Image 1: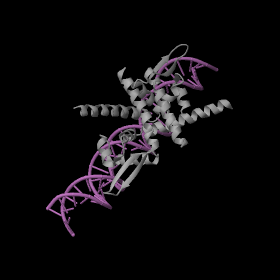
Image 2: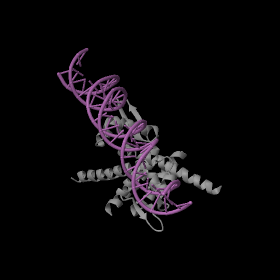
Image 3: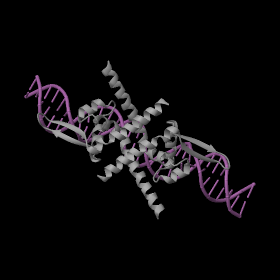
Image 4: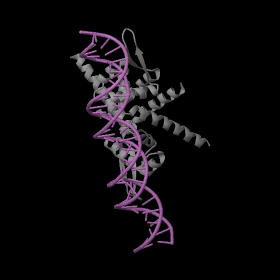
Length: 111
Length: 111
DNA sequence: ATTTAAACTTACTATTAGTAAGTTATGTAC
DNA sequence: GTACATAACTTACTAATAGTAAGTTTAAAT
């Protein structure tokens, strides 16, 4: 019974991990989040900052990120209309995760 | 010029991050690595440990992981033939990365 | 000698990514 | 106030990747 619970805990951790890594690893998701760490950006700014991404996929990924609660879309009307995307609290907390990934990658490339 | 270098550094970090996260996020890659943290496993053990993965994709992902230098394939012949997969040093170091991801996921789900 | 199992391969279908062109709403130049 | 430009999408289509199903090879077990 205890063993069983342990296994369940492990499975939960495993599933948590699985869904998160596959979401973050979806093409462009990581780099879009990355580009928003410095602060909110407009649709076009993101598009120009990320070489290779298409506008269709950018829109799709922004919707994915909104749905996951990692970014918010903000439509400003004054002084003129513009659309901005900003990381939520939970999105901002990904910076720690991203740092460990960069560190690991560099260690790997150095050796 | 300094600015330019800074930008280049940033681009390198960004590219490092981008390629790593997209590789780790490829379907099944994360969970395969995860299942090898406890020690080397046979092809069939991995297959049975990961619900939903097909044998074709498992083979493909194992080749991907070998190519990236994260696992090694070992063919043992004594006492009887068996194939084992084990994480390399660099593969094992991913445990830190995976921990931050699990932590982040749990914090997100709690709030 | 025949069957069984592990570890793949090959051929095919379904899903997802990427490209190209079109749309709408607002903003700017004349 | 008409023409042109730009931001932020949408729609339709093609290319690439994932997933399914069935077949192959090698070695061992009965």
